Image (cartoon, rainbow, N blue to C red; front, side, top):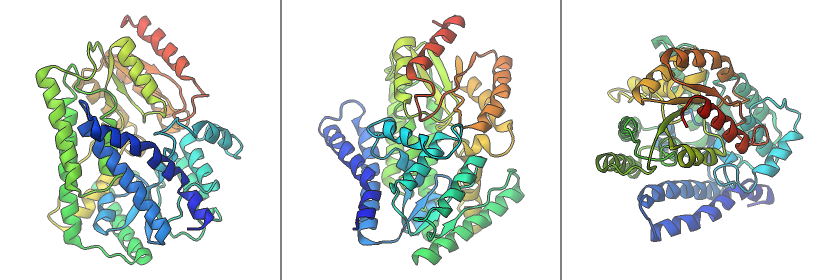
Length: 433
């Protein structure tokens, strides 16, 4: 491995060094929830180690975005790393040992300061050589203009200019014509991967992978139904792992299905025995945006100071549909529908604002929500455009709505203490204290 390659995996090595001792400690002293946390860490570490192996041994591997079906990649037996995940690597899932220096570095980039900080961080990691250069790149051009610009910037960087790129073309609407079109894009993706990795797709293997993944999605949705209970069974920590386990850490793995079974069983036990992770629950919040790097500081404070739980959040709530595996066409159509309609941010930002209205209406009612928190990430222009609609929906539903106006990655924009103060004054004014 040359110096450039070693540098490209340096953050990944740091994250392995950070979490390996945590894994060993949990295995030795699992406590009440270690059986749920250990598989997550094992998945993360195994994925990181495999990425390093591919770089060291010059094996073919991909960089991919979270909207591209991992079932296809698993069925083709090709390793990949989740592109955006790298902004978390070596930083303790965001906000850790490197984030301050990284944020200072992006200040020097010739990019608008109101451009999404996630995208600016991604560009900085590319410029700084902190992203392993893959055999090929499965890109993303939705849901916003910023993402399209980010994609263009990656294609023109000197280190990545020769990396073959496939970017599925997302339709605007959700009708059957759109699904059929995007299914064709998924088939083209398979041809692209085969061309650049030498791997082929066995449809019977893809069917097996999808059927196993369907089990995980079904259990996840069942788990979300249990979260409607009051008190809700878990704190903010465990639900955040549901998306990672099935979208970024591989597919078709019975061990991951078993993890969802354990997660569901633990939640059902807590509801049955009335032993929620967070005692003395008083308020139920809906966090309607992706969680910021410093989310733990806010969510744990809400739990401790206000007896408030995140009963549902945008990443956990997505209308995933199970894939019909009866034919090749139905599989690709199902994967296409899930890829361009169902994922977090994609579901909310691509297409019409009806998705935002429907989400808030259903979740407030189904989860007996007391307060809707609309973080209003400065880089999410689509959500900013939807804020007034969201506020009106909440007004019609009779539920308090607060727009924070934060940066999901950069706490300098609005500090955690300022966020807490704004929430405290709002909750007090609403008589919820």
